Each structure stands twice: as C-alpha cells, then as structure tokens.
Image (cartoon, rainbow, N blue to C red; front, side, top):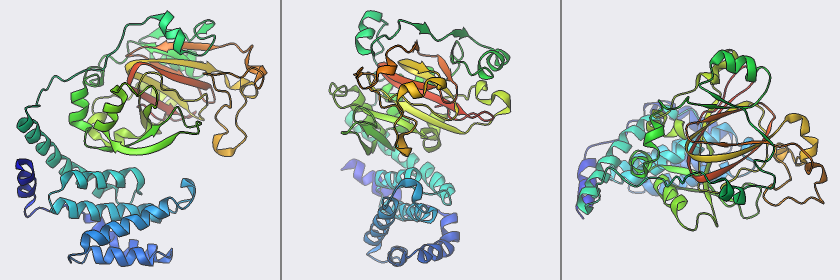
Length: 421
C-alpha cells in the first residue's frame, strides 16, 4: 500500500515529453494510411484525444502494429510499421506514466526500443531515462520497506578449471589437437600484422582488466539494480536449430533468476546477440571498445551481448564479419574451423540457415557427416578477461562454461569492426 501511494503521488502533474512524436505524428499517420493502416490511425487518434478510452485505444493500436510486425519474415516488414509500433508504445507509456504505473511504462518503452523503428528513437531514449529514474526510486523504497537493501549481493559462482570435468561437457576430440595462439597485451600493430591481415584467430589476454564490467558484472545485485526492470528478448531451448527453441520477452531480473536456477541446464534461457548496450546505457558505461575493433581504419558495426548458464551453446556457424568476442564473466569453450573447410562442415541449404552447419557437435552422426571425422580442430578455453579474434567466414562453436554470466563480442568487416558486447 505504501509503495502504491508513493507511485501515485510522484506522478501528479508529470507527463512524458515526446517532441519528435508531437512533431511527426501527422506525417507518420499519413504514411501509415497509405499502407492501408486506417484502423491504426483511427485508434491512435482516439488514444490522443484525452477521453476515458485512451488506454484501451492505445493498446488496440499497439496490437494492430504488432500484428503487422509478425505478418511475415522480419526482413519484409515495412519500416513505417516499425515506426507505427514505436508510436503506439510511446502513447501507451505516456498513459501509464500519468497513471503512476512506472514499470508498465518502462516495459512499453523497452518494447518500442526492441521492436520499433528509428524515427522516434530519441523520444524513446529520453522517456526511458525519465521513467527509469522513477522505477529506481520506487525500487529503493520497496527494498527499504522489505528490509532487502543489501548492496553487496550474491555473485555468479565461477568454479575453478578442472579439465577432466570440462571434457565431459565438450564435444568429442575437444582440446586434443591444435590450440588457438594466446598473446598477452597484444599491440595493435602486432594484431594487425600477425593476425588481422593474415586472417588468423588469436586469444588476447591482459587487455580487459581496466573494464568496470570485470568487477561489477559478477555481482547479481548490481545487474538487477541497473537493469533488473528492463525488458529483454531471450532464447529458450538448446539453440536456434532445435525444434523446442522459442523466444520470450522477460525482465532482466527474471532472466538472471532463470540462469541461476537448478533447471537452467534442462531448458536453458539465453540472451543472445542482442544490442543490449543500445538499450541499457548504464551497462555500456561498464565496457570499453577494444582498439582492435578499429584495425585497418575500420568502424564499429554493431555491439551485442550474450548472457547464459553453463552448457549454453551456439550451433556451429560462421559470420561475414571480423569478430572479437570478449569474455567478461565465466569461461567459454570455442571450437574453430577455417572457411576453406565449409563443404566438409555440411552447411544448411536453406537461405536463412546457410551460415549454420547441419552437424550437431554435441551428438555427431558420423554416418551422415563422414567428412567431419578427420578434420583438424582448432579450439581453446576462453577465460575471464580474455578476448578472441575470429576472422570472417571462420566456423565457430561456442559453449558457456561455469556460469557464462556475460560475454562481450565485437564484429567488423574487412574495413569496419562490428560488435563488442
């Protein structure tokens, strides 16, 4: 009851300002009408009218835009419908905010950031800052009320390395052939000359000790405090090639609870290849983009995050860009095959999966995939505070070991680097 009164009293006479939405609404509604979105335009108009049916109309408009986002393959969704979804999320968030429902407002804004377009991004970001401040104030109040304001918090349980135990988890022949070269504090010149230009993988150690994330991200309470109420997309199931695989949208706190649960190994939940740092700015402050991401005058192309429990895998696949995968918390096994062996790795024939292998390294069918048997393996264990460079088109299979709390990855193409989660 006390938290409810706090919520309502702090919302009095406050609104979420959306200058871009206010300015662009007429033109955006016109573009939506041109694509047949008359019902959406009608509901949006009702939602903005100031009547008692505002929330119902705003939610209806958001549902209409959501249906358009899922009417076909994601790449075929018209940009105007992604902008329509952002618009609807902002409308819903504004109404929740005025009602003092700050967590619902934040969820609506996160949905706009995750699924919406770019035209209203500035409004979404500014609204998140304002709403998140309210949510954090509310959370501190609730913690004091419940006597649960411990700042130290529990930490991810990172076990010591026992190779015999690890080998039981790994695919056959792991750690038995060639190991990826490891270099300590590799200079940019050395990286460019000996690895980047030659297209050769390398593990780089002693290059992340200055990252705030190295100490902060092992603390569960810290992660919940800065990101716990944010909605994030997660993958549920063994991996994206499995029949039981699905995606869900849950809060970051719910995700952290799942990856610590005893059942996580049976039905793992994984936050994979998500631009988390574009969405949650506080976490981005905890990392630094490695200079290696700018080798040969390149530019950062994308910045993604991977979080997952022990045993989480990404199927054997390749990417078109240069990659730098930085391990912040936990350990990861990484197996590599050069691009020249693509035929022997049996890529899927389907266009959407052509960069993924049909081979399940956790349960190899030698009869179905005989060429794989005699291939030389290049692999390694990536420890906390290390990063690995993976050249373009190199096939790689990563497996999380010992509570892979957070992983950071960077990608670039021949001239530009991409993600460093």
